[in-house]
Image (cartoon, rainbow, N blue to C red; front, side, top):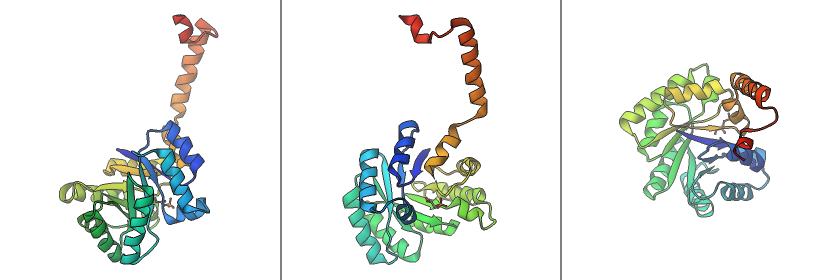
Length: 226
Ligand code: G3P
């Protein structure tokens, strides 16, 4: 299971990274436009922050084959080694994915809505396919069912390609995508705390503290080992 942080905001990425076991950072043109004035600087800073082994994802902004290839080369030479180039699931995108995958790039097919997009992108060599869960739900279609179909078909036809579910608003969407078979998810920084927090856990901790203090007062457990 892989968890990625969907953000280009350095301080938010840092907050999550220090606490949560994450595998990297995903960005897209909208995230970069919203969160920075200098995309190259922001992406380089994220690379420095996450180190060489966690994966950094950045998306091409061109929509034609030649432009996608040129941008992929520039992104990889500036942001490698653990870098995945995001290419939208279009006909031009498929052509670019095929070439880039053959050249050894990690490729993420993105902005995905349908099972056929998944199968075609997987066949073109994509390592990840990224369905946009909330955007699919907004069409009054059950995204978990679609993600489940995607995962099932990939496991059968293209097991090296993983579903990287994206665009979540509530934790239940994350649960449902993972239960349906997504092997990776990318989540806004603000949502990570929501995934770990539980009022039940808080109540348990209060109970431990109360019972401990009643007997041992201010001493912590380490005080007994002095
Ligand atoms: O990674 C996909 C994501 O950034 C787009 O979805 O809906 O959160 O903007 P959304």
